Image (cartoon, rainbow, N blue to C red; front, side):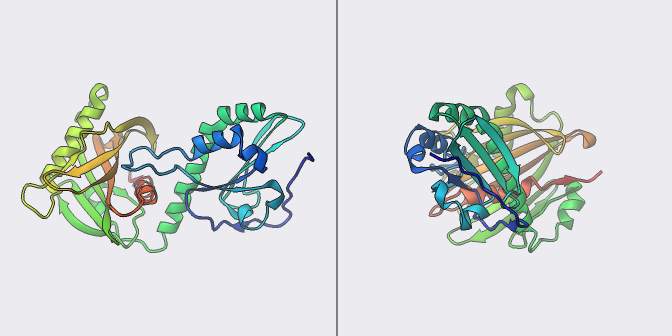
Length: 309
């Protein structure tokens, strides 16, 4: 086996790859074995909070000798090969821009697996950050006027023009985008600082969003209101968002006394400067569609938030 190297002497082209896609450059022998299994298990693991299993990333595999053309134009590339030394390196904008080129080499398949195991969380985080930034760039092509949001909450968001204001109440705004066979929604509301107790965060978040659903989000028939699906425990994590402590919750909603349901992603942002909790949530209803990329768009919109001083 010869050692392969890749050179790029020209200015990187702009990446035109599909969202949430990885090109894996690896010989078929490694791809068919434990190394390939590890990559699939880690990077194509199910997205948390969706009602059906969908992969975190869509993976396209190419043999090393075919590493050219579209594969080099991907935003996310993992290049794996056997070599005389163990090596892990992330190169930005090596063949295209924006791009993360992950180089992993090892003397044996076991040593490659060790490097994968150690570095996968950092790789996934970097790729997701790149994809969020790319999605936000795409959303900027046609923007909604967000002055109503700025005036009510003192924040700005990158929201595409396909979304429309469907409800505005005191400290509450609902925006919706109609899609074929369903819709996607963003709701923004403000609650008092002590509404979410850290020790009982999940319980308080669910009770809060259910009270909002009862008050504002109803179906077409009487008595149908949005509630959190009780059959599935939500996924909860603590993150730092715009420098503020934030609780991220992913789960499934349903319309009580109806058959509608879908995924949601909820952010409770502790805005210390304004002594409030700002809640931003995205949810979708798309029974005949895959929902990963729909929810990813909602996440990108929410994560574009800028809190005005």
